[in-house]
Structures are given as C-alpha cells and as structure tokens.
Length: 294
Image (cartoon, rainbow, N blue to C red; front, side, top):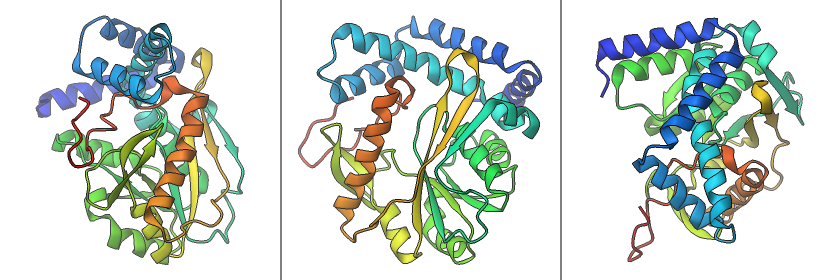
C-alpha cells in the first residue's frame, strides 16, 4: 500500500514521463510489462484462467502468446496514465484518432449514456470522448482503496470538465445528469457482485453482469452509445471508436439487455483479444453452488 510519500513520488514520475515523447514512454511500459511477465504472479495466473475459459478452442501456444501480449499492454497502460492524466490537450490530440459514427458536437443530442468497456485504452478513450463532446459530462468511477491516489485520479480524469461520481452513489446522480442533458460515461463489464446484476453468458461462461445500464436508460429516457479505446500498433497512440446508439434498447428484460451488452463486447474482444482487461477476475462471482475459478 502506497503512503502519501509513495503516491507523491509515483505521481511525480508520471508527470515526468508526460514530458518526454510518447513513443519512449510506451516502449518503457511495454518493456516493463515483458519483464514482469517473466515472474510468476497472481495476476498472470488470472489472465491464463480467463483466456482458458473464454477461448477453449485455442492452442496452449496461442493462449500463451495472447497472455504475454496482454500483460505487456496492461502494465504499459498504467505507465501511460502519465500522458493520459498529465499530457496537454495538444499532445493528446496528436495521439488519439477519433472514428465516430455520430456527430459528437450535435447540440441536440438526446440524454445519452456513453457505455465504455475495459480495454487497456479505456482511460485514454474516456478522457478524450469527454474532451471531444465540448460540453460538461458526467462520469462514474470505481474509487481506489488508496485515498491519496484516488483523489489524484478523480481530478485528472475529470480535467476536461467532467463531473465525477462514485459508482456506489450513482443512480440518483446519473438521473439528474440525464435530466440536465449531460452525457454520462460509465462502464458495466466488470464483476461488481450480485447487487443489480444477473448471470448471462460471456464467451459461453455465466458471468455476473450489471443490469443497471438498461434500467438507467429506461428511467432516464436515454440512448446507449457504446465506445471503445484501442491501442494502435507501432507506438502510434490510440483510436477512439464511437458507435451508433443501440436500437430497441432497453427492452425491459434485464437478462436480455445484459446479454446484448456482453454479445457486443464479445465482438469487440475478438478484434483485439490481447487488449481486453483479462487481469480482472471477470468470473469471480459464481451462480449458487458453482465452484470458483480463481
């Protein structure tokens, strides 16, 4: 656990990295990820378990290849918080390509839930979609256990005029934001336990999946607009992909709506499996009577 001095040193290091060329920072993070992958660890084991569950058809060699690439991406993503949190808007503009199926500057955009997914570039994608909207927006986040680091993360994630709120306090705040026509960013593809969740398949495995997205959309009369962040090859930066709002969503059937969200995510994961956040215990919560995986 980092104390305040440790947090200050870590943040100082990130600020320093933000000043140097992105390619150097990205290569440093990649090399650090490769080095850490050589050491047995709990997180490395989780990556292999998740890949084995989701892609049983893969050969061991294929799983090993993707696991190593993902671990390098995951560690690199933490290092790249430097430019994402402390880099100037001008620097980020040179690093982030935007591929949007909608007009993000539409002044008549209806109440909107911006649904993000936990690929390794989610931090860059969330910061930049907020900037690209050119209007205040709301953003839900999962608080960190370290208060000092959480305060810094909250401030930097909201630096382009985003109002941050803890996921635990979200429903009332989100509905207020939607009434004010403030776009709201949130992620719903993590395992947060059984509260406001149901079990639906994710790559054929029953996954505890939040149902709050559909209910918030229904109550707030909001459209669901998915977005995905992608790390570009050859240390060129990122791509923010924004998709058209989902038709006929929500349906009122929590399980069907949750399954649709997971099905969309599966499509995106197959495009870049090494970039999804496999270090997370996605299948931690199990149906009653089913043994755990981890």
